[in-house]
Image 1 (cartoon, rainbow, N blue to C red):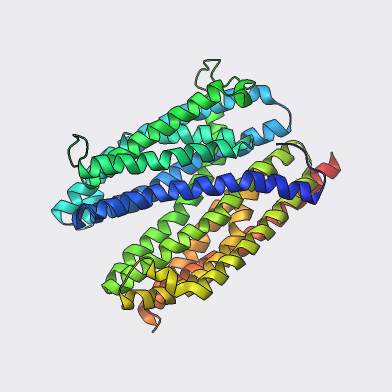
Image 2: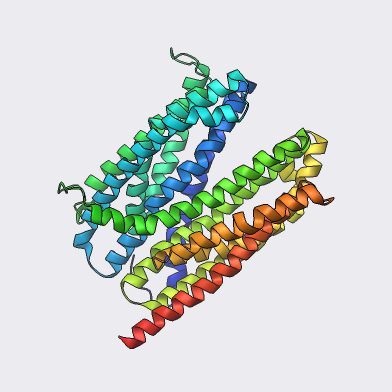
Length: 453
C-alpha cells in the first residue's frame, strides 16, 4: 500500500485491494455450497445432516473467526505509522490467541454438541451424520483460526491477491477431497456427509500451511520476519486484541445467527415456502459478498491512513467505498428485478417454488440497499478501531427490532412468511442508519483531536 493524492489514485488502490478479496470471499462461500450439494448426491439423510451441521457451525465459526479480523486494523495502522518492527510480535500473539480459542471452541463443542442435537428432534440417521460431520470439522478448527490470523496479516499489507490465490487453489482441492471421501474413491471408504467434514479439515490445514510457507519465504513479507523470534505468550497483548476482536466477532455472530434462527422459524410453514426461502436467502447471501468485500478493503485502507494520521484521506476512502457499494447494489437489484424467475430456476424446477422464490427475491432487493450502506461503514469503523457500538447496534437492530417485528408479522398478520423478511429488512435499515450516525461521530472526534494536538 502507498499514500494516494488524487481520487483516481484512491479508486485504483481501493479496487486493487477489493477485487481479490471478493474472489476469495466467493470461493470460501463456495466450499460450504459444494459440501451441501455433494452430500445431497450421497443420500437425503447425508444432505440433511450436513445442512444441520453447517447451520450450527457457520454462525459459531464466523463469530469466533471474526475475532481475528482485529489483526487487520492493528497491522494496517502500524504500517501506516511506520512501526513495522512491532508487526511480528502482534501476528505471533494473534496465532497463540487463535490456538487458545480453538481449544475452547472444541472443548465447548464436546460438552454441548449432543445436547443441542437432541433438542432439535432429528431422526437418528440425520443426528449421527450431523454429529460426526461436526466432529470431523473440529479437528480443523486450529488450522482454520491460524489461517485467519495469517490472512488478516497478509491482507493488512494490501497483498490481497495472495489470499485470493490461496482460496482459489483450495476450492478445487476441497471439491476433489469431497469426491474421494464422500463417495469412496481410489480405495477410500465412502463416508457420505461425514466425508465433507473430513475434506474441510484437510483443506483448512492445506490453507494454513500454504500461508505459512508464503509468509516465511516470499520477499514481500521477509522484512517483517514474522517467525524469526519465539515470543512468550503476552496476556496484555491478548487483551488488546480481544478488546477489538470480541466486539467484531460478536457482531458477526449476531448477524449470522439471526438468519439461522429465521430459517428454523420458517420450518412451521409448508415445504414449498421453506425451499423458496432457502433459495432467496442463499442468493442474497452470495450477493452480500460484494459489500462484505468492500467492507474488508475499507478496513485495510482506512486503518493505513488513520495510522499515518491522514484523517482526510481516511474520510475520502470511507465515502468512496460507500458510493461504490451503493452503485454495485443498484446493479445487483436491477439484475434481481429483471431476472428473478431465471435466478429462482437455477435452484429448483418446481413451479410453486420458483414463483414463491421470486416473491422473496423482491425483498432481497431491499437487503442489498441496506447492506450497501451498513457493510462499508462497519469496515470503516474497524479501520478506526471503533467496534463496540457496531456490536451494540447489531444486537438492538437485529434481535431487538428485526426478529420480534418479523415474528409478530408472520404470526399475527396476513403476511405470513413474508413477515420475517420484512422484519429482517427493518433491522438492516435501522442498523444502516445507526452506523452512519456513528461514523459521523467518530470522524468528527478524529478531526477535533487532530485540531487540538
